[in-house]
Length: 192
Image (tube, rainbow, N blue to C red; front, side):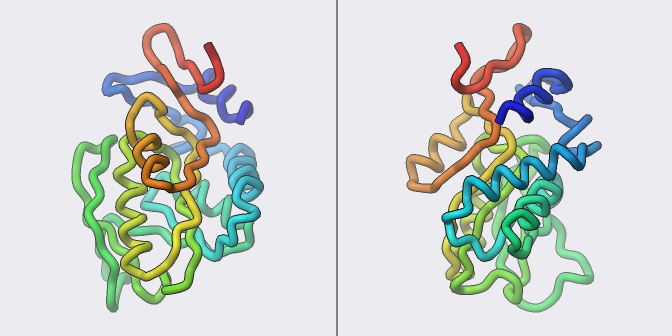
């Protein structure tokens, strides 16, 4: 998606790790018009997938998931990284390793909201090692629901997550795939 690639080129910053910082428009300060365009594009790509619910993980994927849910007219559910007083009842839970934060989280979803028979689209801001998507897939499986695929704003194509998920048979759609990033800049899939 050229619109997103252009913003990444203009405002993205490469940090050690390698970390792509897009905090000025995507996952700290957010550009609502851009987020809504991302949601429309995800909706367009998965229009034929029979999606009944969108699932994301707290917190950076929520805005994109809401935009996609709005575009597809389906509810959006997010897995919480911390069990709070307003999370009650029976829960699905799984462990997710956060590459960005370098820590493990036990994420939870109330069983009342992720149901057997749901056809779930996973939406997130980044796909790097694929651990968040794997955790969400586990929650979907626990519920007896079906996964329609995963849509991410930015995939780090030079890391193994997307490749492994696709090899396992999951439909993965990235709106921008970074194949290389270093002191020379950022290269997207399809560029030389």
